Length: 281
Image (tube, rainbow, N blue to C red; front, top):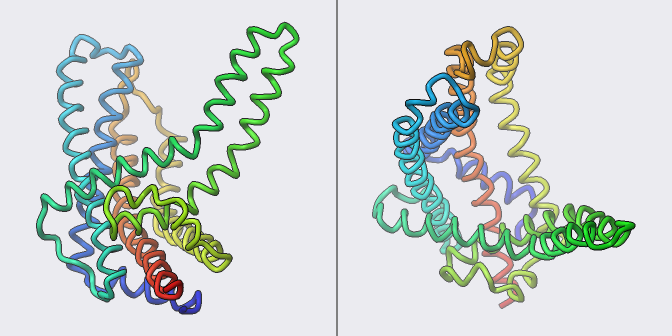
């Protein structure tokens, strides 16, 4: 197997190896992010009883259209990530083409559904304990049993989230290779894990966070300054133009950079998956 630094260096070069393809993905992801800002701007004031409540139905329709477009674009980008992982395992060292849009949309949709189901599966013990704990608070007068269960559920949250993250990275690659049920090959995926893999995931996450923070920090600072100096709402819950623009720019830049960092992380984990599969053979 490759050294940790080889996975990182290869994945970083790969993410920026074809600027044209990268720009397509970055712009699509930025559009999805911008649409999410639009939806939040429309929905939040209306839900808070803003001045344009009488127009809320029309605005709700517009925001629903924006949400739908953003969702479709999101599926498209997720489908591309799936293609990146699959072609990496197959041995390709170049970014895949943005073709066969139908395939990208289907793979992106299945990717979203699969990761959502995984989240439910891993959080299920926590959810069950939390619900039982709430009922216990009402049934038990002292509240000791219910409070204990609630505390246990909170303590379980961190290890379960960590386990979900570690599992999901490899499950996504397995899905790209074996199809939807590849998400749920628990025995196979846990067998692929190792101390080296855990360290790789930590490094990938840290690098992603650091790069994104460095790039967006000037825009984040400007946004915070605007938020501190400008009223968030200029008239009965309607967002000020300054805050809308600041939030929009921050989201677009963050989404654009986020696409490249996702390419980086998907590539690094897919390379590990490829090497580990070959090693186990």
